[in-house]
Image (tube, rainbow, N blue to C red; front, side, top):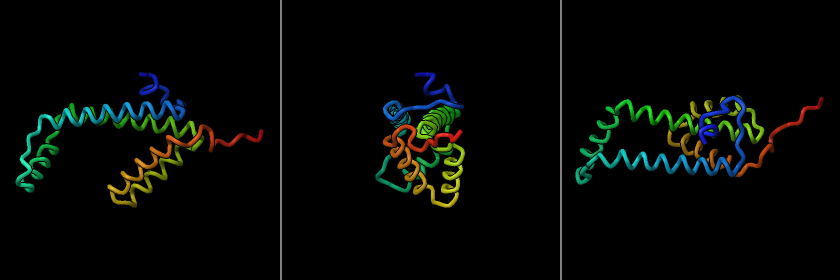
Length: 136
């Protein structure tokens, strides 16, 4: 498990079932982390503007351990996606460049939706479907 989540960064590959299992495991971990964070926040939503300001204030003063956990989750997620991209045969550098170009041209909520949609598509694409055999 540690090798799949943290190892083989340069040339690791994941098949569909493994990608689905580890993505689900990561989602459960993220939801547990969010519920843990929200358990310490008491917000009275009867005054919506005050509640919104309190949430903004709390998110602006995040402790370093929360930021470290968010960076950890993001690293694991990116590592899983890159391994799955490699397994489908897509050129990782070209795919990431395209994603960054789309990110630069779209609003953030739309980009996050497209990113999650692309992660779902990775779950159904067969192994080596985009890989081209060398002619040599």
